[in-house]
Every structure is written in C-alpha cells, then in structure tokens.
Length: 327
Length: 262
Image 1 (cartoon, rainbow over the protein chains, first blue to last red):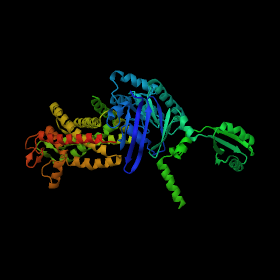
Image 2: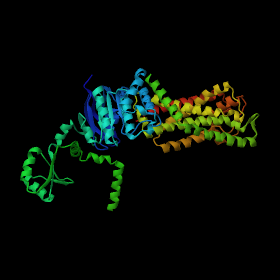
Image 3: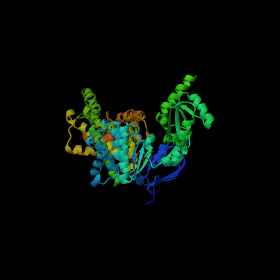
C-alpha cells in the first residue's frame, strides 16, 4: 500500500493544436478531500476524464491505487466512483433499478447486494421513493441518487464533478453531510470540483488549474497566504477625499466598490485602531476580513469563480451582442 | 464472468425499458398491422393467388414478420444515441466491464425486443388464413432471432459512430426502408428489373426474409420463395449461412467500434 492513492506525472492531453492539459503533476493522499478548481476550459474536465479512463492522455501517466489509468482501466474503474456534472441516470427506471444495474456492472456480490442498496438509499433518504421512476424525482433527489450509486461498490476514490451545482443550500448541506460522513466511516478519498468556494473550505488541499497548468496546490489556509494581506473596507461621508488621503498617508490605491473603499494591508488588526484614530475624513463604517478563496482564485486566474457560472454560450452571445451594438 | 454479468444486465435493462413503455409496444405493431391488413387485404382480392393456395396477404405475411423484426432491431440502436444524449451511456462506459460486452448486451437486447414484436405479429396468422403448427413456430424463432441480431448489431454499430439524434434518424431512414422494400418482403423475387434484382441480392435482409417465408409457406425447390443467385437456387440453410455471416461481421464491428469510444 502506498500513501498516495492518485499519482499524476507529467500529464499532457492535446486535441489537435490545442493543449488542454499541459504537463501537470500532483498526488492525492489516501483519505484526502482534494479540491480541483479552475475556470471553464482550464483543463479540469479533461483531467478528470483521463483519471476515470474516459479519455487517454497524449503523454505522461496517472495511477489510481497503483493501477495505470490506460493499461489497467478495468481495475481503475472498479476502484472509483463517479458523480458527473451532468445527470447520468436512466430516468425510465426506478431508483432501485438504477442501483441494481450499477451493482451488477460493478460486481457487487449477490449476498450483500440488497443490503447495500438499502443502506445507500437510506443514507440519502430515498428509500421511500425507491420504486418510483427517476423522472419523477426532483433535481436534488436525482443528485442524491447519483451519490448513492457512486458509493454502492465502496470505491476507494469518489470523483465528484460539481456535485451540488444548481441545488438549493439545504440540499447542498445535506449532500456535504453524506460526503463527510462517508470519509469518516470508509476513509474514502474524495476528488472534487465545484464552483462554490465555501464548499472547498471542506477540502484538505486544493489545486487550481488554469490554461492547462497547475498554478497552485496547497491547503486552503496556505492558499490564502498567497493573497497574504487582510482586506479592509471603509465607508466615509466623502469617498473621493478619503481615497486621496489613503494614497497620501499610506501610499495605497483604494478601490471603489459597492462597499465604499477597499484596500489590502498586512496585519490589519494592528493597523485598524491607528487608522481610525488618525484618519481625517469621517468614517461611517469599517470592516476587516481575511482573504477568502474567492480572492485567491481571482488573484491566480484573473477571473472571479462566480463569473464562471455564466455558461460559455451565454457569454459568447453577450459578446456578439455588445459587438453589434458598438458598430 | 464480470463481462457475462454485464451482458446480462444491459440486456435486462433493455427488456425492462420495453416493458415499462407500453406505448412503444403497441406503437411498434401498428405499422406492420396496417401493412398486413390494409395493403394485404386490399390487394389480395384483385391479385388472386400468387402461387396455388397462397394469396397476396398470405404471401406478404412472412415478409411483414421480417419487416417487423428488422425495423424493431435496427431502430433499437437509437437507444444508444439516447443514452449518450441523456448521460446514461457515461455510467455504462466507466463501468468495469469490457466495451465489447456492452455492445453484445445492447445487440441482444435489441434482438430480443424485436423478436417479441415479431411474435406479436405471428399471433395474427389465423386472421389471414395462415396456419402455423407448433413446430413451424419453433423453427421460426431462431430464424427471426438471427435476423434481429444481425440488424440489431448494424444499428448498434451505427449508433456507436453517430452522435446526434437527427443524424441517426436520417441514416436509419436512408438504410432501413430500402432494406425493407428491397428484401422481397412485399413481392416475389422472380422477374424483377435488372437493377432491382442486383439490389435485392446484395441486401442482407433478403436472406433473412426468404427463410422465414420458406418455413411458413413451405420450401419446395421450385417454389418462388427461394433466392436464385447466379443460376443457383439457395437452400434455406444457405440463406441462413449468408445472414449469419453478415450478422457475425456486424457484431464484431459493433464490439470493436464500442471499444474505441471516448
């Protein structure tokens, strides 16, 4: 047994001239919750597809639990569970039938099949609806069923690609309870992509990928140190004057935003009392916050992760629209 | 062992879906029955006997069986395209079973569903004066299944390559209807125009329809139900051999094609 359940070495994937994944290497420890973030088109899905044997790398190699994802794809497939970004259930079958299908293709022994199906369905609270066709389920129920299915064969690694996208906060919390419970009980390694930054706070480590390259890999705390400074927002009765004053006194450019003025400074807690005492313009309110993972993502990729929720198509449409108007 | 279980569960799912979908079950029978009763009965009176003792509806009956089985199995390929569109194919493709067994399971599923549809048409035999003994039916089942499996694997092969619903439907219409119409399902194979004769003889479905007719209506060496190829009248077994060869080739290609899916 080695300590790293996922090993990726110099992985490259090209589609013609396009380099989707550009020589990335990383490892994931057994039992870790590993967050994998990046803007759309950064190479996230391509990497996941290679790891779960749906696509072959151009060069480099990857192993899961010691099995090569190209040469030993059967063993890899047996070792992993997947919850895809897009639904992958048979809506015409019942929840129970979907799980039965999965148990059969993953060779869950007949002696424990029924008991395990009951166990996972009860865990995601779908036992009462087990005989209903999946098309009658709500979005959250389908997601829960997919998570139950992903766990049915006791995978060593569970890949969750946007597991809570488009779900309400209550359902999201519930799903996270299952995931954390599962890690506690089974020691399952979890490989996660998500757009919700508060969710990656649950991760032990986070990798950020942009333009096919890994730009950072660290614990959430470690990543926040990249931004380093604390963020201070201040509201005054004359923001323009206050900005001028900040520039003169502290040699800093304050940004105007919806909260008034925002600037970054190291050791914000020590700075704040002096600032309030000495500042000339009348302060209406002031707040200090630690850098969030949103700030980290923005700093590393130049984009806010929330922007990414607007689909590429929609953005392209907007782009065209604005171009046409400009003419 | 895993792969066998995979074949079984994929086949089972197709049957389950067919069972759930009562409309499809009824819908798949409407077209052949319209053909049989409207077309067949309409023309029988005018045309009289094609062969002593066999009127047009009776002549067409085995052809309708062949058509039902052919269309039922061929069009089942669409379920692969559906599964791709709705995401379920991903669940199948990342499962630890070989892709070949996925193709095999789909082919068998398509063939079984089409066989059931064919059997449903068989039930109407007495209404048009075709009498079937138990032995005839028992002989028909493997012939129908062979035709269904051959055409089913052709459909699966196409579905492995074609991504969009629209494209699959278009290709299906383009191939399926000519195959049905040029299979000798609706007319005797003798005295056809030269071009048509060639198309009929290279159409694999012809070799599926002829044995079904030979079993239902009797196969004397000089009956008009056989296929004459280069002056040689093919026996029932020779027809079966041609179809089986075609079916085996399609199945291997479908299995191979599925293996290369990304």
